[in-house]
Amino acid sequence: MNSEPNATVQAFALIGPSGSGKTTLAKKLLNDYPTIFSFSVSHTTRPKSKFETHKIDYFFIDHKHFKKMIARNEFLEWEEVNSNLYGTSVKQIETILSDGKVPLLDIEVNGAERIRKYAEIVLGRPFSFTPIFLDVPCDVQEMRIRERKRGETEEEIQKRLKRYEMENAKKHSFDHIIPNINLNEAYTQILESVVRPRLLHRQEMQTM
Figure (cartoon, rainbow, N blue to C red):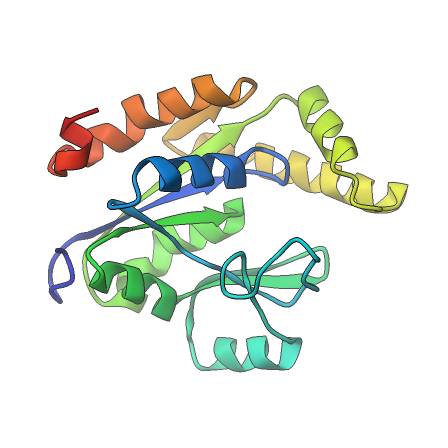
């Protein structure tokens, strides 16, 4: 276990715009390696859909509660997306580490940049953070967003597409860029080129 105060701890994040496949690939990693990874459940102020479960998909809280957590420095990272707040709590990461597992995050590009800059200061220990950018071509991204329309207006869809452009412009600031046109190919590349080399000390990875 890497829960000792001065031990270097690891975390992985799947990052990219909405519709890039972060959640799907995260679930696959969690299903295939449940003894290694644990999902870092984010906090959000957006309304819960009928398909989501509190404390499983997100911690659904109101703006007042979220702002109090910000004031108390309880977030490792947070940001506003489409007028809703999202954040990764320090407590959530510490809980996963205390269980001897590797945190797996599903976050936005700006959140990943903040973690790279400030995580060691906030956590007070060496922190090895590996963000993996999921790269989706513009035409494929637009198709996915429209397929998942969720009852959104054209204006809301255009906001998502503009955010895609903003996040895509930052992809080259990350060391690991994985094309995600084919889900299975993307998953294999994530395992072979990024995850497995960093977790070879784990017996579960040695038996792949």
